[in-house]
Length: 452
Ligand code: NDP
Image (tube, rainbow, N blue to C red; front, top):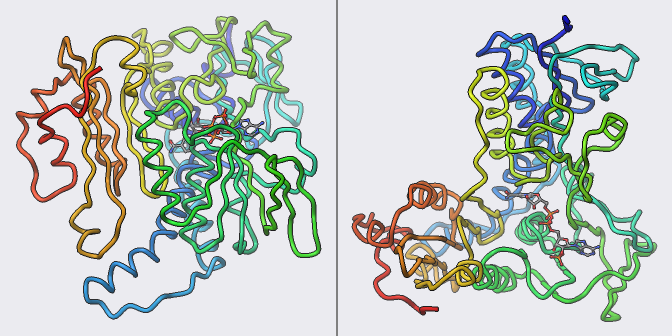
């Protein structure tokens, strides 16, 4: 049977674009891709990239303050949101152009419209065109979900944060995950009066307890009004903004309410149910270790599968799919020991097991340190950094590394290599310190803080 294409990819985000261009560029496969919105997906258009640029924008007040301590005659400065926003969107346009060029250069045919799956080898575009393909790859990502709350229509999500006409003077952020915590730091840094409320007793559920507690304290120290064990009852519009009533009976009068209460895979209206593609309870496409769905010609990568919802993971899954299907080299994407950074302020970098998870598996030694880094100490700042190694008592392997510090994301990338290779505590100790740095503390942790 002949097909129009060897591969049809639905979704032009990190996973889909990578799979499409590697399949076309490296294996000579005939590939098409449909994207209904902008190329680059969540990461480039409404996620990692604009978020990180906003983090950079929000860090200047502390740089200015530190500059004064270092002898610079620096005055407090005003932030012009419209200038930043214009430049931000010009940058996103540039990056989207690069994504399009990469696809073009690899010979991928692009359809700028929505597509759904009509049968195991046919995709139907929004304009009714039907296209056949030997393989179909679902890479449509995910989207924010909003709970049912009275007045929820007045709230925005992270998607809209990059499109605001004006910077609010005050904001209430709901949620305690990556997105809520990152935006709380950004808004606070930009001078917006920031309140963050979450329904549980600590931010960043699932991460190492001590480490997330350290981040929460530091966020409070920087001015975020972080409140736990509380949720929103209703949101009402007022003449001047929004009035939010919470479960403690407190009222918050704010300009904006942003919800970051989780994301859901974009698996709706793709025609999947009818075909027998299995979906999980959160709408995620169920795939095997090779990203293959219950329908053999249909694969899925990235957030639509809700495995580890991170750009580099989606890219890995896309690459593994191409290896498996187009290079006759069955390859499972590796989801073990994924290093990750949460761009809170201060930043958190983490890889491997939390102390709690490691302790549940066997006896461990825990090494911690907390200190004022040189740069901050000189500037008279109070905030400390925190570092932690979780070590298996039996094998002496480092099972987890957790860092809260400026540039913790950069540090954890490198610590992640050692830990992925199976480094022991002795390997860390054998490594000569780079002096004077913060990360040298990771190789000079002499005695366990505790054993359990
Ligand atoms: P998360 O799943 O991380 O957090 C959701 C938060 O919302 C939790 O605090 C949860 O509380 C709370 N919540 C859920 N439902 C409700 C509700 N009905 N009412 C009130 N609160 C609720 O989601 P995010 O949206 O923050 O992030 C989604 C994913 O995006 C992350 O898991 C991550 O994979 C990815 N991401 C990665 C980033 C990075 O790498 N730096 C940055 C941003 C996102 P509870 O804990 O009680 O369930």
